[in-house]
Length: 237
Image (cartoon, rainbow, N blue to C red; front, side):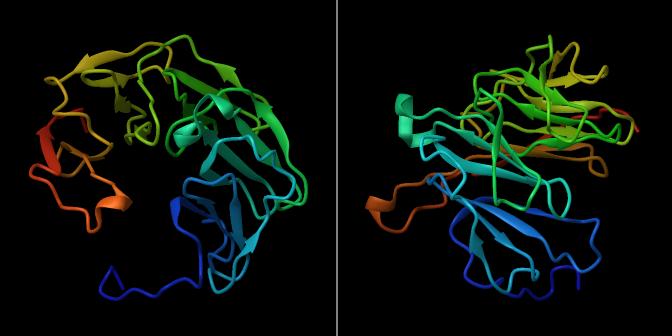
């Protein structure tokens, strides 16, 4: 009902990201990555119940932060080092049997949710910067030449506008690509502070960046000043 009411989806674990099978009108298949852990959980009943499908994944993958549903049986999982540091061996993992078995399909960590483009490709920001692409549902990956997006932890993301323009965060400024990641140009002023993420509103023609403060040992975390900031940026129709 447009956000007027919400329903809790069972006992899903603390998660960085949830991916939904939008090809299913019932939204039955949901996938979450357990925040800070090498675990991923699956629901096949629209979130009523959840099951751990991590048995086939290496415990050394780092943090299983970024799941992606390709279809009801095919899932991707992108991981990054996170707080596990150099002991972790992150990458992209793929299953075609709903998580019974997993295969490592890319050997570098990724940052944030992937972009599923209008061209059918899947594009992921690398944790160390740059973009990796798949045109076959995540089975094979190629690193694109353009380095534009900076990546880093959970902040990586590419937004695709209706005209196929890509927008992401660079090291110090927002970056734009109009050739599907082959080349990138910086736009706008320097990024404020060190944003944790961003989104773009084509209607308002504005970028919104946010920062967050997270310290479980300190008790309730404050909402700091300038937690969300806006940059007016017209990237076309």
